[in-house]
Image (cartoon, rainbow over all chains, first blue to last red; front, side, top):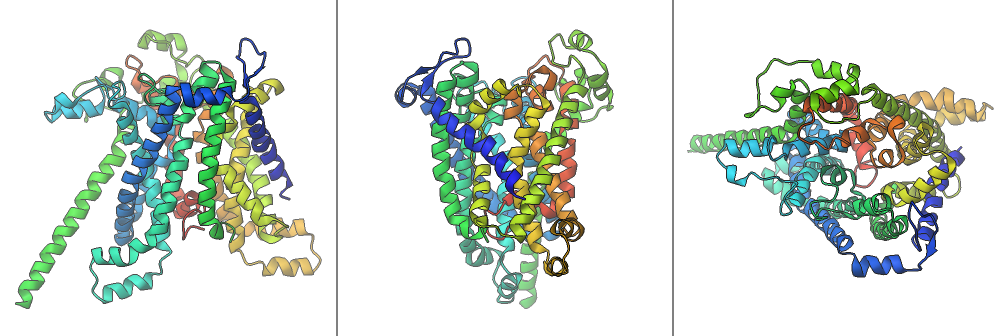
Length: 281
Length: 301
């Protein structure tokens, strides 16, 4: 009964994956489909001559780093609050989770409007409270575009981090908290003595997920900036898309895809190694 | 003395409660405001949408929701002064999104439930490896197969067809369907099924008469999450569709939120587009942990 599932996986994952490694050794374009074998030239070009590719790698690292640094502490704090105040907690949880489930394209457009230099809510707000000098074209300014994108990223993913933390905290038997309260531990002590140690593994898992997620990231940047201004906000996926389908260099795009695959594969293996015992339970 | 201490403790407690409520309200505003602003814009006229300072009190209009379906492109261009891809009205894009979502989920659910049941009950040789393999395909970035799939689709004539997207989305969602449904099947005791099998019942009959009815709620939750996934997919819809098969996200991404475009119209399309997910998340709240953490953290099944 599991055979149809396997057929799908092989046809849509395995076959294309092998194909991509093959394509990465060629150069051709959509106008002239004569494929020229170039060996590893696409890869040497990528790492030695392609400043935007290197920049996109850096952006992936920045994206993963800032996601871990900002989303994990806030997510843990919110999860603790939600579990402690259950009456309003459930509704609050659903609300902070909303941004994650609505379409990333819709979210990107909403925030593109909010960052709009003339009518965007953010500049309007800054002017209203007398901070008009801070108003700027957030996504059009090379100094702020990436930060503006990160702001939206955090808005989307804090809900997911919170949810992951809630799952972990819920695995703690409630009796532990009860006896802690009887022993007179304060909320903060309770957090430090019981919750934090249990969160250590979670934090490692979340960081790996953030890195893997940064290599998957596409929709938001493609809609908000298309990698601009001056190619400063590209991540590897958007640069792949641009190279393959806009600059008509599918072979080069495939080579970028190979690097994304290798990086992600290593990261996912790491994640699986940590979680395997539970995955295959 | 004790009284005083109690008083102080009480006051501190009140202060802390006030602080937590305050922080909660700020957080709620932060998370809700952009969504509120979208829905508010969809209920404004063009002039109201662009007014500075922004309007917080206005007479709402549903004009935009009518216009996106009834106005033809020429009229919209006359209003907005810009070319907008609404040549056949927004219903085409919603129709495309709907067809693709519905069909791929129907296929993924049938195949996924069968696979999940066999993994859960019969544990064929290598079940663990298979589950793990299915899961890892989900965690790898889909874009790495974009280029081969594009050429594959071009050569097979699947490019710019509904069926092409349906097959692809079926694939992307199978791992999730299998994983999720296996966790629901695992929770159902198998005694009755085993008794029926011993009595000589047909295994297929046992599956749909005994096992399936017990996981109907789980099946509903699984389908709910699949709807969210497929309805929101952007990358491959962007890559593999043209005007005739374009789905809603590709259409709205095409507007890029530029000034001059009538934000109210786009906001109306976006509002309708995010509505299913908004409703589903409150319905599915009970299953959030299982549906979203996907076995990666402790405590999530």
